[in-house]
Structures are given as structure tokens and as C-alpha cells.
Length: 306
Image (tube, one colour):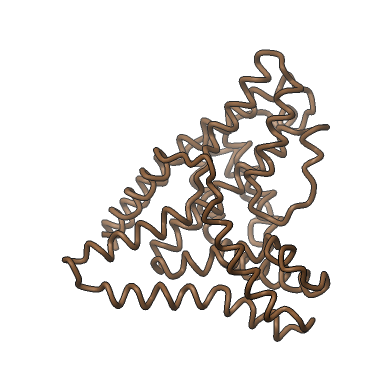
């Protein structure tokens, strides 16, 4: 049943490219803002931990109760549909590969300014980490920023979700997504809580995210290596940062491994020359496409063995 749920959810997510992929995300933000308005009044670590426990724990308890109530009803079909429903909501509705190829097409037609504007808009859509600045999309290395955002979206709204679903079921998915939104900090901004307390909340959520993502992000690096140039990707993975428990270091290493797996030279990936952008964007888009098949094959093997 597990493999069937994953495949169905992936198919629904692939063919149902929602124009407003963040509609359910907004409901999560409303829930977290409601909690933060009532709990985030004291700038102490205890209130931070209480907020995380409520935001992540209450939806998890509701899901557990629903699973228990539906257990055995209609030959388990309702339970199956609930699993698929949770997965589809947790997965990203963004066509990441299409976004990369869209910017590439702008570049190849010579419309570099249009490609940069497209990248700037897509950076906001693909953001799955606390917003820093998207001004780089209008300046230098906009293609690199777009690739990093695309990799972050694929990691956090696909591979980590599927990984923890296979390991611990839909409850783990709900907990992870709630922590992810707390880390983004949008709910704290909407609730108007104290900035110092909001920073404490993001930092605590980031430490939780770092633990949750440590193994999935390393497995994704292996997938990239298997789907691309293995030796080049493996040499990047040999870096000492591979073992660090840090979200940003993991993101940077993932980007380096992905670029190495594409076969694009390091000079071109770091070059700000717009003539090299189509090659980088196209190579990463193709790598993500091949990695999906590698991931499905490995998931199927895992299900058969376990």
C-alpha cells in the first residue's frame, strides 16, 4: 500500500499542476498565525517550544485520530485515500523543471532581461526557506540563484516528504511540513509577534529541520550522482561539509553536487556570463528528470526488500 500511495500521489502532483499551488499552504499559515497570536507573547524558549509542539502536534493528533477512526472501514479504502490526500497536500504543485526550462528558452532567444524577470518571479514562488533577498535575480548569477531555489523546492517538497512517509507514515509528513513553515517565518510576520521571539522560533525550527533533513539530503546527493556524472559528483560529496548538521551548508553542498553531476564545468556554473546560463539551466532540469526515475526505482526496491 505504501508504494501505491507514493506513486498515486506523485502522479496526481505531476499531472495536476495547480495554478495556485500555495492555496493549502495559506491555510497552514493561518493556523500557525492563530497559534502564534495566542502563545507568542512571551520572549522565552519555553513559549517557543510550546508553539512548535502545538503547531506540529495538534495536526498530527488530528490525523492519528482520523486514521484510527477510518481503520478497517470500506476495506481500508478511506485510509488509503487519506494517505494520498496528505501526500498530495505536502508535495509541491510547482513545475520546477518547467520553470528552469522557461528561463532557458528566454536566454536562448536572446531575451536575457526577460529571463531575469522570470527568474525573479520564480524565486518567490520556489522559496522554501526564510526569505533573504531576491534582488540577485535582477543582477549577477541569477541562474545560480534560480537553480538553488529549484533544488530546495525539490528537496523539501518532494524527496524529504516521500522519505519520511516511507519511514514513519503520514504523521511524520505533517510534523515536517509544520516545522518547515515555522522555519520560513511567514506566520510570525503575519501574527505580528516580537522580532526577537520570531528569530528564536526560526532558529529552533531550523535546528529541527537540520536533523530531519540530514539523511534525505545526503540520499538526494547520491541520487544525483547515480543519475549524472558519478565520479564528479562523488568528489564533491567527499567534502568535509558532508557530515555537518547545518541547513545552509547542506544546501550549498547539494548545489555543488548537482552541478557536478550535470557535467557543467565549475567555471561556467560560477560565471555570470548570460551566454552560459542556458546550458546550466537545461543540464539541471535534465538531471532532475533523470533523478525522478532513479528515486522511483530505489523506492520500489526498498518496498520489496522491507
